Length: 310
Image 1: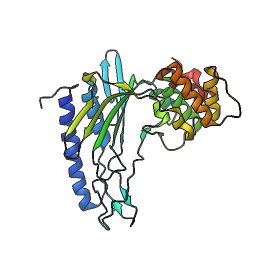
Image 2: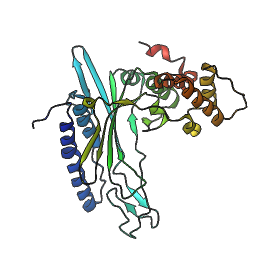
Image 3: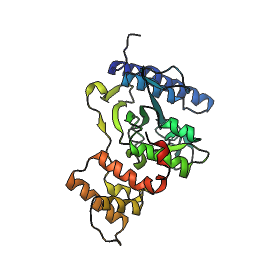
């Protein structure tokens, strides 16, 4: 095939070959076998990331390095893929299971469908050696396939996105250390797309395309277009229900910014103050993600950080 890494043409051809066509075949067989319609999309995420970034993989699958940035000196990247598209839904009227490609219920023809999109990125950290390895890659790429509008059964468009994350960013580093020492169970760390924990990684969106129902691909963001951008924190009022961004953490941020407030203020009121300070002083996203990361994680991990300092 006459394609090159780092080109939009190659990315769109790859999506057609390895995603659109494969997904059609898997869904067709799933209709017959009644088995899952979710193919191993993690490897497709790796192929796509190589095309988008221009970095080749190590041909290792689940072992070795996902991306080779340079060999001398060795620099490498890690890829995490979250696939939210082909999760089974349920008819709210009759309870029948509904596949992702069905616009209505095959039993009662209802369009009152509950779609699921609760997949997330997973990072495994079993011991301290794993924790150190998680922090060693030069860069992480988080790949996401999701429906454009999951609430609209008539919209079958799919959004493919890739974010670039520097693991030296304290939002990432502190999160990993906190997970290992304070949260870790038998399951890997869950990173939810579009939520605060991920936003604190200061992720840069380097790729976005719309895979349309008619199989057309519209590439909107690509490195050669020079339109990558940091995915900024949401309006702080959005985080009023965020359990990790506690009242004490919000107060810490305001104190660091020398903002006065009544100690009796609610979390919602304090978040509004923080949002006002952000707007009035035009605080940068990296400053805020670092500030909030310190507020959330330092009280929990300050005694553990020494062994992970460069």
